[in-house]
Amino acid sequence: MSTTYAMPTSPETLEFLDSIADDMVAEFGVSRAEAVARINEQWHGQDLSDEDSLILHEEESYWAFVIYYGGKVPDWSPGADRTTWVPKPPPAADSGFWTVPA
Image (cartoon, rainbow, N blue to C red; front, side, top):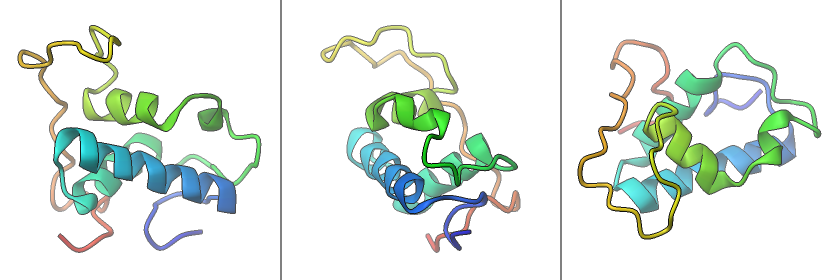
């Protein structure tokens, strides 16, 4: 298990989770610490150590949007106007999901 993520991972899923975090940082301007905390909240308690993990069947950017907006993505178009979209609040500071220093 990674010390960054709160669930068991394989080398492939670890790399995938890092890419999702990178996408959230680039796309939404959140810190890496917040991106990792959001990922931990999304998948804590699950085993992602299988090389055929279901999460690998979607693109990193898909998961970045799903996690950041709490599954409520009204428009998947690349140029969609997101000015009225409301992101899901980040996990609470004392939730245990914040494993990367801010």
